[in-house]
Length: 78
Figure 1 (tube, helix red, strand yellow):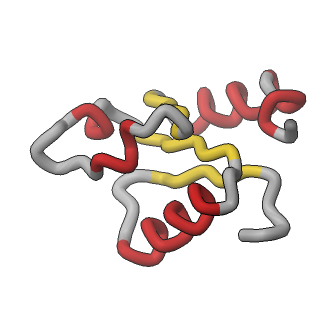
Figure 2: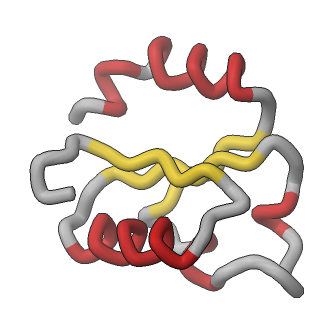
């Protein structure tokens, strides 16, 4: 994680993903949270960490996520 420019967390994420998520937060890495549906905003099942101002959410298809990452490559790597 220390070497990463950013992290993409794919939901539903497991415990290992959440550990990496926490490390990324602690290292001030750019975090993009991906969900194919709107589960990010389901407050009964989501994590409060998903709603921190440091975390970006992307909801949509994996194809659209790829387009988002490549069209914002300069932002992703900054």
